[in-house]
Amino acid sequence: MSEVPVLANTAVAIVGIVVLIVRFRVNPVISLVVGSLYLGLATGLGVTRTIRTITTGFGDIMAEVGLLIAFGVLMGAVLQETGAIEQLVDRLLHVFGPRRLPHSMALTIGTLLQAIYLDVLLVICAPLARTASRRIGPLGSARMGAALAIGLESGIVLMVPGVGALALAALLHVPLGTMLLWGLVLIVPTVLVSVTIMSFLFRRGLWNSATDEDAAVASETAAPAPPQTQKADTAEPARVRPVPAVAMVGGTPAPGPAGPGTRRPGRPAAGPAPGPAGAAVPCGRWKDPPLLVRFAPLVTALLMIGGGAVAQATHTRNPVLSFVSSPVVALLTGLVGTLIVARLTVGRERVERALVRGFKDSGQILILTAVGGSLAAVVGAGGLGRILRGYFSTGGHIAPLLLVWAVAAALHLAVGSVTISAITTAGILAPIAPGLGLDPVLVALAIGAGSLFAVHVTSNTFWLLQSLMGQTTRGTLKSCTLGVSVASVVAVLLLLPLSLFL
Image 1 (tube, one colour):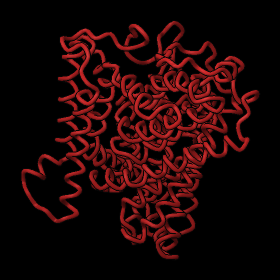
Image 2 (cartoon, helix red, strand yellow; image 1 turned 180 degrees about the vertical axis):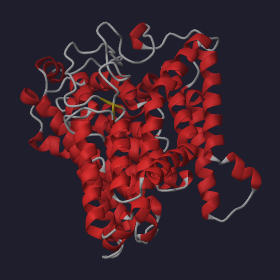
Image 3 (spheres, helix red, strand yellow; image 1 turned 120 degrees about the vertical axis):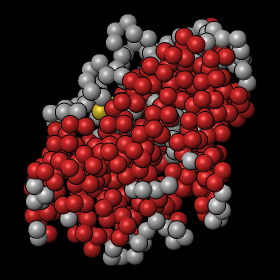
């Protein structure tokens, strides 16, 4: 088939997927499969080959990344149940103080805490950040809101084990250790520079407490907080905006109004049952383990994966090291260690409850990632990769990266979901990635950076942040939409020099 029909039918398929998700609120999994079916039939693959290509692409991605996503989500659910997140934020406040808290909290959320399901992490951290913002001063709500948004959204697509980063690595065949190391190299300066830029803009008059914060929050931050250490107030603000257009969970559209990220009337916010001052009530034999012990299994798993990447880069071959650094073995080790610590801390019953919640949360993420593989397989079989390879291969290293970033940014503007735009972009570009003359990890990170651009009103992160931080819609457009967009641009600008060395 000639170039024009292939390009036209691909454009129709992508626009159709976006319209189904945004206009008709069809679940993205169904929308991506329908778009893949149309594209396969329209490009002449035929019924049998189209279905075989979709199912093969689905299975290949599940085989590569399914266990990794499941282990990561389960580990995060158990950490949430033990109250480790609240303890970590309290420690950050104690060590770095309120002035440096936006940088330290954003960096911690974007790196160490990416095993936690995004909406759950936001619901846990936002009330803590709101309480801490009173100690920062009049710009506390703005700075903490921007820091939360930047850390949450950047981590999900740039840092392993964020579900977006895992999906990008699988779709583009990037070794997970390589994705972890280079994602860490990129996300640390991205977060620090972006939070600094937003703080500078807020100090230069971008933020107006009278119009960007609810009256109650503005009055809270106007008066200095008492000097003693404040405990987190985990009570949810009374006003929670409905999510317009499409409900999102963890950066992806939820299955419906009663999806895992939706609050029912009378249902408490996600997280462990609060005890005194909002802390989790320990029910195990080990009442209060040190913070390092709580996170040691997760940190160990990441070090094991990173060690494998270092061994690969130095051409070190050792069967034992290869086994230990395997992502499946590493994350399984982290999960088992987290379960042991949690059993000793909060007891068997609460651990089992956390696992049930984790299995529920991971279901849609797994299927959504796998149908992204189906779309990639159909795109490759239909000939689009061959056509686009010619367009992307001109202009050296920099132009292709900018084009990749622009495609992901455009899809995110249309869909409004960081994860879906990243997975869809990877599905479209995966067939041409080997012919770009770029290391696949650069393509993955460029897609992740582009998918961050302009988090807006169709994102659940936007509305949860607006409600839990007590900001107006105008204020959230500044702290969340502008803040994450700044991170998107900073990330791609930092990525361009890296492309000269990889």
